[in-house]
Image 1 (cartoon, helix red, strand yellow):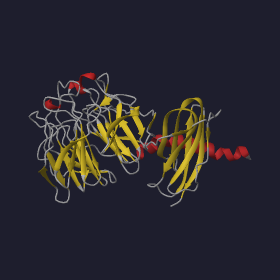
Image 2 (tube, helix red, strand yellow):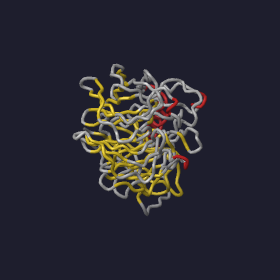
Image 3 (cartoon, rainbow, N blue to C red):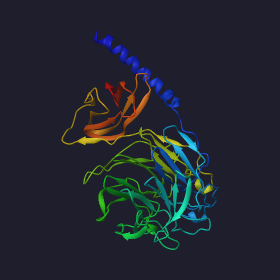
Image 4 (spheres, rainbow, N blue to C red):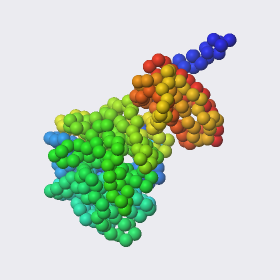
Length: 433
């Protein structure tokens, strides 16, 4: 009887394997960019991502992606709906063409700062987009002209701009803050290291700044933590690969660090996952995700369902002069994995999720024997279609837990699978809303 009960499960496992590729091909794929660009900035209002400015022409003789002054910028702005996966090409254009500007959404408006214009000048001007009237207007200029800077909103009425380069200097370590209500820019605590073509993301009450070009000293992997009112400090973890002109996509405490230009001046296909969950608890998770096509100078974002989308940028052969990529790349969602200390299991095991049934979050515990192995945990619906990837990478030996959020999924029974070098282990779980 025991053997007979296993037959349907084995048959279903085979069905999952056969359906996996076809299920992926049947998933709704985003349409290409109507106007592909490199060096765009972006800002998000609700489920709409605005892709702003950048350069679209073929760029012959571009050396190391460090010469935006040789690009011909555009004023074009287009919007992508992250739910319907459709484009809106009726958004009003910028007042000034800009390459490698910075953009932030504050108080239902979008602020676009700096960048390089068509004459090769680094700008300190700022434009504001009002989606209700579909219009742009100029507002107070920054204290410094900056291109390749990073910007974030803080609170509901402040903007912080970090680093970047000027017309004849850079990379800056200077940080400026803008008060939307008073209409004033002022300098605040500087970064520890000057950077250009880096990224900054806000997680909880802190802003994390990482990557970028440090001038003649090369690329950075150092991560700084900035707390308004206190300044910045280096934290204990760093990027595994120094890079610039890369993409980031954040969801909750997790931040994807994607592709970009590496230390050897070659485009990278690697993806890192940072867990920036709290004071002194920052960590990273190794992944085996690699892009089919590396991208340099692109935009990344993550939808509410955890799907990551990549827009524009140049492919690795940018030195020969190419048109920016038109395809919209995707990365399946991942979740940071927590290792439970002082536990060295002898075998691969997969425990029943708890709670079960659940709504909408649950925890999955699993064991990896030492020294470690490459494993994955995937979620399937009862049709055998893969709907989520929770783990995909090398994990050290020990007991691990990973969380699953089914907020954007339908009620029902799902199968989760631990794939190991020794085979697969399956369990059922029930989502009830």
